[in-house]
Image (cartoon, rainbow, N blue to C red; front, side, top):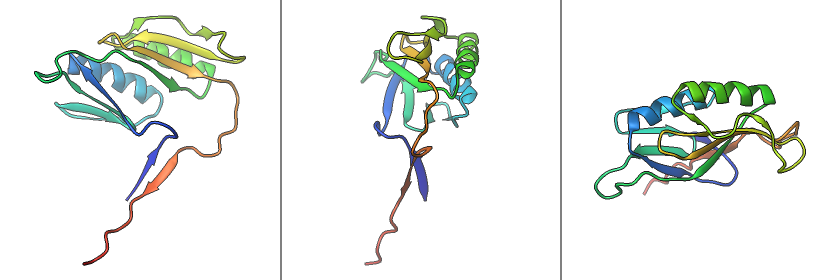
Length: 141
């Protein structure tokens, strides 16, 4: 079995106070970025991202900044609008940012107050689309 992963983070686990609203938001945002989302009544999973509901052991939702890469400025604009319509709140409309030349991003608050960014860094060549992890078959005893 092969899985594809990114370059730095193994996974991110968020806790939400409203799983249904959070599922709607991330399914729209990630779907617009062509990232597959798997969800059921207890969680949402997309590549390295795992989201489930806060519970008695962890009652508070998380608060982090997550940035998702887009393929173009137009994709930033489109995804930002889709995520806004899916329950996100404006935290900075798409536009140039001073972080480096060509940095174009839009920011939203997700239903739990996480700062979500959609960013395009400008034209670039990548060495690979993703890292492919192939699991070894266990040896027979």
